[in-house]
Image (tube, rainbow, N blue to C red):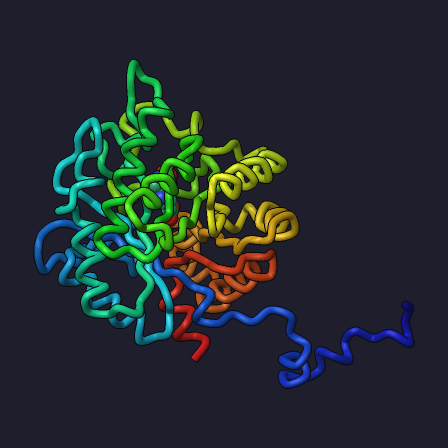
Length: 323
Ligand code: PBG
């Protein structure tokens, strides 16, 4: 395998040849577009730390979902910003909650768009944690019941897939049991399986108004130093019935995406999170990078690492680039 017999540059000499030997291709079907739904009417509020993203009321979100669908993006992921927060996250599982209303409205207008709901309590809890809090501790087992109720209410409202993002142990089986007991055995679970306690979520917490009021999420989300533990988390979720497993964040965690893809035979999703998005937007605004090229390079790399699905705020811009 040596020079001068081998000259890898031969296959790089022009655009057409490069395209013939390209190993990774992005398509609109790769993407899931996250959206933030809030209460009220006619609301479309800019999220300052995430340029191009908005908190939108149900009527507005339906309009944007229509555009997303027209571009060929197959799915959206909904996060809710409730009117009231409390100690038990009541609006998370209320049939009149913002996500429940948005799901029904979107499915009513665009039945073919796959609507995935984020199942978590942090946006709905007064303390901003993903579980029930007692004496400063985040309780695991009592939280499962609330998460299962939330997933059930999303599915009843018409969600196509539910996506638990809380990182409580045992939540996938709690959700599977409740869905099955209610005749919803065909609703898949996309589990945030290897979700790290990451500083890359901070713009999202402004967007979803879900910053913890005390402490942090390190007692339930994974330590960024750990690689083997991700295999364990994913194995547990698959055992409990997860149909799609997710790695989050994506960019600094491509080793994890690759490990999971090599180890398991279920579809792997990767979440290109808010901080990853906002850093690109900020550097582009300063004129330091070429936003479009960086965006496509990041997304291609996430797919090359092994992601079958990519959750990204860039979905709309990226698909426009692909046209
Ligand atoms: C809810 C949740 C978070 C994100 C998705 N679901 C925030 C968190 O765990 O604090 C982050 C998404 C992003 O940063 O884009 N638990």
